[in-house]
Image (cartoon, rainbow, N blue to C red):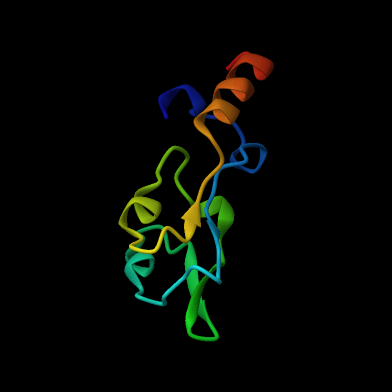
Length: 85
Protein backbone atom coordinates (compact mmCIF):
# COMPACT_ATOMS: atom_id res chain seq x y z
CA UNK A 1 0.00 0.00 0.00
CA UNK A 2 1.83 3.07 -1.26
CA UNK A 3 0.36 5.41 1.36
CA UNK A 4 2.17 3.40 4.05
CA UNK A 5 5.60 3.90 2.47
CA UNK A 6 8.03 4.87 5.19
CA UNK A 7 5.58 4.19 8.02
CA UNK A 8 7.04 1.85 10.68
CA UNK A 9 5.81 -1.67 9.89
CA UNK A 10 5.57 -2.64 13.56
CA UNK A 11 2.88 0.03 14.01
CA UNK A 12 0.62 -1.56 11.39
CA UNK A 13 -1.51 -4.39 12.77
CA UNK A 14 -1.67 -6.42 9.57
CA UNK A 15 -0.89 -10.10 9.46
CA UNK A 16 -2.55 -13.49 9.38
CA UNK A 17 -4.13 -15.48 12.17
CA UNK A 18 -4.42 -19.26 11.76
CA UNK A 19 -7.35 -21.11 13.30
CA UNK A 20 -5.67 -24.43 14.03
CA UNK A 21 -9.05 -26.13 14.53
CA UNK A 22 -10.11 -25.30 10.97
CA UNK A 23 -6.67 -25.89 9.41
CA UNK A 24 -6.36 -29.13 7.45
CA UNK A 25 -2.57 -28.87 7.06
CA UNK A 26 -2.63 -28.63 3.26
CA UNK A 27 0.38 -26.30 3.20
CA UNK A 28 -0.95 -23.84 0.62
CA UNK A 29 -0.03 -20.93 2.88
CA UNK A 30 3.55 -22.16 3.09
CA UNK A 31 4.05 -20.80 -0.44
CA UNK A 32 4.05 -17.26 0.98
CA UNK A 33 6.99 -15.42 -0.55
CA UNK A 34 7.50 -13.46 2.66
CA UNK A 35 8.03 -16.68 4.69
CA UNK A 36 5.42 -15.65 7.27
CA UNK A 37 4.56 -19.23 8.28
CA UNK A 38 6.43 -22.16 9.79
CA UNK A 39 5.30 -25.72 10.52
CA UNK A 40 4.40 -26.47 14.14
CA UNK A 41 3.04 -29.91 14.98
CA UNK A 42 1.99 -30.61 11.39
CA UNK A 43 0.19 -27.33 10.80
CA UNK A 44 1.30 -23.83 9.82
CA UNK A 45 1.82 -21.21 12.47
CA UNK A 46 2.57 -17.50 12.06
CA UNK A 47 6.30 -17.10 12.60
CA UNK A 48 6.96 -13.65 11.14
CA UNK A 49 3.84 -11.50 11.59
CA UNK A 50 5.57 -8.26 10.63
CA UNK A 51 7.06 -9.75 7.47
CA UNK A 52 3.56 -10.03 6.01
CA UNK A 53 3.05 -7.44 3.28
CA UNK A 54 0.41 -4.95 4.40
CA UNK A 55 -2.76 -5.44 2.40
CA UNK A 56 -1.84 -8.90 1.13
CA UNK A 57 -4.25 -11.68 2.04
CA UNK A 58 -3.39 -14.20 -0.66
CA UNK A 59 -2.87 -17.02 1.82
CA UNK A 60 -6.38 -16.52 3.20
CA UNK A 61 -7.81 -16.55 -0.31
CA UNK A 62 -5.96 -19.79 -1.10
CA UNK A 63 -6.84 -21.56 2.16
CA UNK A 64 -9.43 -24.23 1.29
CA UNK A 65 -10.69 -24.53 4.87
CA UNK A 66 -10.98 -20.82 5.67
CA UNK A 67 -8.52 -21.17 8.53
CA UNK A 68 -6.61 -17.94 7.86
CA UNK A 69 -8.01 -14.53 8.70
CA UNK A 70 -6.78 -10.94 8.67
CA UNK A 71 -7.78 -7.69 10.33
CA UNK A 72 -10.39 -5.79 8.36
CA UNK A 73 -9.34 -3.21 5.80
CA UNK A 74 -11.37 -0.79 7.90
CA UNK A 75 -8.65 -1.05 10.57
CA UNK A 76 -6.11 0.14 7.99
CA UNK A 77 -8.39 3.01 7.00
CA UNK A 78 -8.69 4.02 10.65
CA UNK A 79 -4.89 3.99 10.99
CA UNK A 80 -4.68 6.19 7.90
CA UNK A 81 -7.10 8.71 9.40
CA UNK A 82 -5.64 8.60 12.91
CA UNK A 83 -2.01 8.97 11.87
CA UNK A 84 -2.61 11.29 8.92
CA UNK A 85 -0.76 8.99 6.57
